[in-house]
Image 1 (cartoon, rainbow, N blue to C red):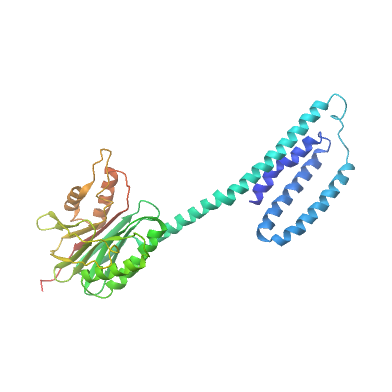
Image 2: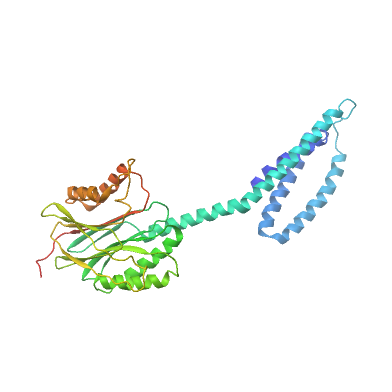
Length: 367
């Protein structure tokens, strides 16, 4: 800012030389201009940090401005343009100098006004975006977890710095539970609500219990803390147990895909239930699906199947199911990347895209 002030006021010092008819030596013009611009730069810097010290600086400046004309009067003067016949030239120089001084001053004033309004707003927005991006990385990082029976992989691709999708996995000793959630909205508000959802869900999952109880508890908590806003959360959870059974629950969410390794086919696990946080007394249920080694369960948010191409056709669960059936036997990281790359090749991302894969590895005999 100090350098900006210095350079902005250089034309004013040179304009004074024009207005005086170029009478002063050039070295004196440069010295006086440098002094004037330095004082302005220091005044701006000191005025922002120590306003009281500004009075001392201004007093010294006024004193020196009184002395400078006396010093200038002792210097050799250029009288070339002072004689008759140069009246118009002197008038033009005066007008040019005046206009340069006024325009430079007004330009710098406009800059300060911009910095004080739009500039501050821009910095605030940038700060919020950086904070949102940090929140996103904290709340929805890439997911990788496993135990003796299951392997979990997950990834989230927000459509902006702060998306509304969430994913997590918790091992409570009895089961490995993973989920995806989609908070309505974007930005800092959605990010704060995501933090509430994640902390509440993690706390609840550390106490082993059925998913229907988890959804009921989450619903009550989120309904109370959303403070009258219209925010709600859709949820798809998988509780992968050791007895060849996976409990699943959906709250206002699209279906979970179940790839069956034996038949190389994909079925859908769906249920109609309210989103979380929408109604205080909503009730929830969960379902059970039996699994075998090699089976893959896919929980995903609607941003991935709703990717649309130029013909307004959606990527869809059918295409996703075909990719899962084709790639399910390979590494889950490869399947995850293939799904996201295929979606990008199909159409432009317009919403957050989140995916969690749970594969059955080596289950013991059925209990």
